[in-house]
Image (spheres, rainbow, N blue to C red):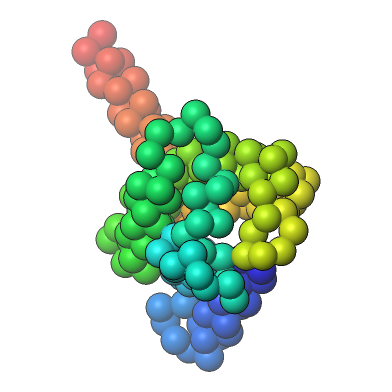
Length: 175
């Protein structure tokens, strides 16, 4: 379901871009906003009371937390807040890079919970557990989109290359 929300939201934003809404002029920005929509949806589950059964709830999320993680209920609230902060960061151009990078790290940190939930057959929202073959590629997709939306790999590489070249040029000038 989360992948569908991500894809549909991204396509809607990109369609708005094609209709001349300048904010969504690129796939990268549209994907950043699509990921933000998905994160608002997934983060909401971290705060839904246990009695609610129409969607994942806090108890479902706590059950996903591996036994080695201390204070599982608190960690679920914390990751929910971090997802919401990341979503807000993605929609602001000035903070998109940092948000995307931090979200990628958060997705990596949450990977053990997804692995635990799949291997322990933890039910989700009253349904069956998602299989590991589904959870891992989804998490990798979210990491990739967060980094792509952040423009971090290309920007860091360009910055590294330009600073390295400048350093080499300065060294040559001194010799």
